Figure (cartoon, rainbow, N blue to C red):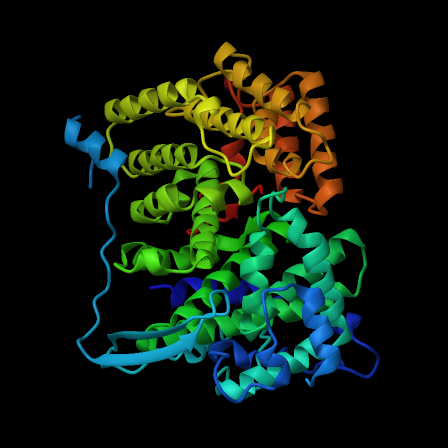
Length: 554
């Protein structure tokens, strides 16, 4: 279900400018006309646990990059319209299940150790009778005319080889620089970290990177991209491309393994972590995830995980990855409801079990996340002709009532820090702005009192949070929605100022977001279409492409 989806991502990423890579390489490397090989990414497919690890592998702990670097120095080392009815409204408020693929009844057993829990897991499942899909051959058939960046060898390695490959990467000076930057700078930008709150990128992502080459490549690619943005013209641009290509190849190997006999829990964690890091790489680079391939591709695994009977026994890392990916799926749904891919089951799990993860990553309370997801899902049904207009209006009215009555004082937050409340309130008003734009996004002027009420509330939330506070950056998406729904010069000026402050504090440039805002503001002045409103969503969807891009203003 997802191998073909990731074909979009692979095709997109392997068509990177080889000329650019040649230009960045030292003289004498990859002469003009040569085929550039980036890789190998072999260790990503292997479960990097068990015997055969080198001395450094035995010492990998969730203690952060600095501890790992000390270890290195001491060891080698995703129906037509019909009349309104109550059942129809209930369908979109309760959600519907996606059909799941069944596997033939042939049993297999896998065993591994999760680096995030340290516990051994033994899994029994069903293995399909047919042979595993040849992903590499499939992609070669589909994209044989595209410029290719291919690994130099097969992405399958045994456990000891995987451990050795990771050790070799960790010993590189460039890797050490990237790991230190990830732990000390980038992980701080990606989460709301205050006293009493654990940074999930340090506690969940880093340990996996030390055990799974695919996660390590994804982490290093994202970090190199971040450094290259902070330091224009940095040679890290080449490293970013190289590691992302290797991570994509490693992800393919994991998915081929899943097609053959499902993943162990450790490999499952690695898959989720890799996809999350690749999506953040897209966010860091431009704010657009091409064709939404990563989120679409992982949605099947997320749905299956949410339905599993043993979900309560899963690691906190899995809960964090699920919450983060589900939020990003909802986030792209703001720009086009048809992009929503995750199931109701996934969002329900996140609502009931992922409160802490949502708060620390986004600052959005789970009830607000869950309710706006229902509205976007209903919008998707309305656009598809499955949900009638009268019933869609009922859902919108109920949602508006919910968001207006939601009391931030009654919500539960991770700590007693005062800034959780204004951030939560900003997301409440951001959701109100999206609800008010349906069913006709052109109908209501941005000067309407209901629109302006939420715009002002979001800007007030920004004004109540210090620019140096870890919460400030998470107000960015509500700020974008406020900026897209105003024509006031002084409000626009304040929005620009706040965006610049977020860019300065995080290193993320948000080019796609600022481009959309600029186009909306210019069209409001020109009013070339003589419409009451200029909906920003018109600039994030295109009738010319089958698979819409995911706009992720995070």
